[in-house]
Length: 128
Image 1 (tube, rainbow, N blue to C red):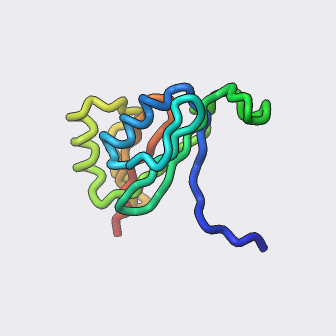
Image 2 (cartoon, one colour):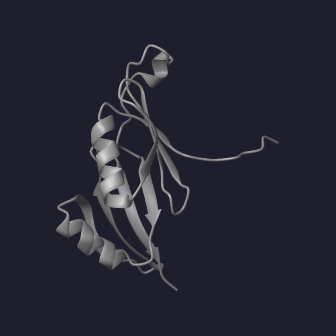
């Protein structure tokens, strides 16, 4: 078995500066590493969760990492205590809302937004 220390998604994007501003401003991530010619690594100080973003076409990377990540079929989920309040904040901040707030029958309240790369973020509250 391979022992895992951390898990974080890594997306290829040409919008590193926009992503840094977006995730720090709207979600409180801090920058652990940022080289605008290569890579952005973000850490959330409250939870320790991490996100990575790699610039496309970087010569140090294999060819299969040269294209920007597709926003089709990829969703980042953020678990929150109050999805309705988060939705109201997202509206007030003029975030790109892809799915309006909904209370699902299976016990989730959530909505979705798009980040500057176009990746979907599902803001989810699990209700009892």
